[in-house]
Length: 333
Image 1 (cartoon, rainbow, N blue to C red):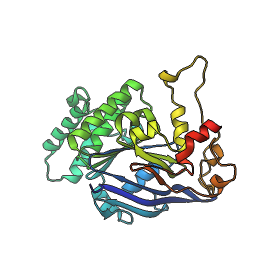
Image 2: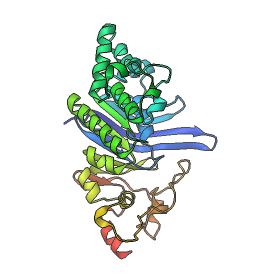
Image 3: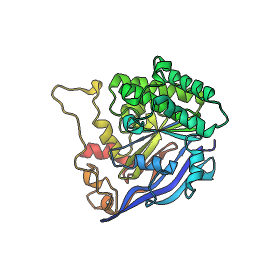
Image 4: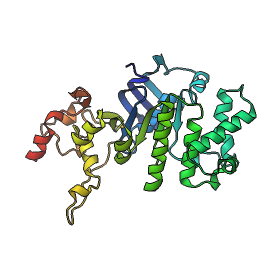
């Protein structure tokens, strides 16, 4: 199967007063038709910058290298008008802060249907409104006729997020990028929002990039996982492989920090990843995770030689020098 979206050796840098900041560093991945790819990592790992690069929404001063192909066509270097024809119609995004993304002075219904009117100007106002009401009903907003003409501040947090989903799927795009779609929502609303996204994806047969720091959300929604750290990809594989056989110390640290009822002991604290992520202005020569890694080699190889992404199995890859021997190193420590 040919990938729908293909990213190869993507590097994004931003000039600052202190030098070039490398937000994304040599990132490569594919997204196949009907697939959900979960991209996880701490804040500042490059997840959102990657999505902005795909949509062509980075500022003009950003320095982009590498390739981004949609259905075999290169997106890097396209002029803004060409990207406007692509955004919303073929690739759409659910932004993480619905309150900030929705315009407070425009009615929600008008904001949802704007994308339809832009990409289908032949539709009448009545047809556009009817489509908007269908979308509100589809994402589970009660009383869509009344809610259509309300303002964002009249919606609850969960309803605003649903409105953002309705806006993003208005033209049934082939690729849906969900950037932290459950941020600041309680667990019950999170489950409802993810259920809506899954139902939409099934109905439209779209592919999805699910960007989040919540491994629980990824476990229930994704087919494959891409783990990022300091702008670099450190592990990728099928959900079960990454969750049950993690092959990178950073992934192991993320999983160990999650509360688990089946491993709970009286008085036992959750594990944590010691230290802080490195400065993106001065990334280390070797593995960026070395200062925080309990498996780091004493000879200095980890700190001096950057590990390449290599296969652990046919569908599982890791960028750790000791990916094949982490269990034995853990026992030794």
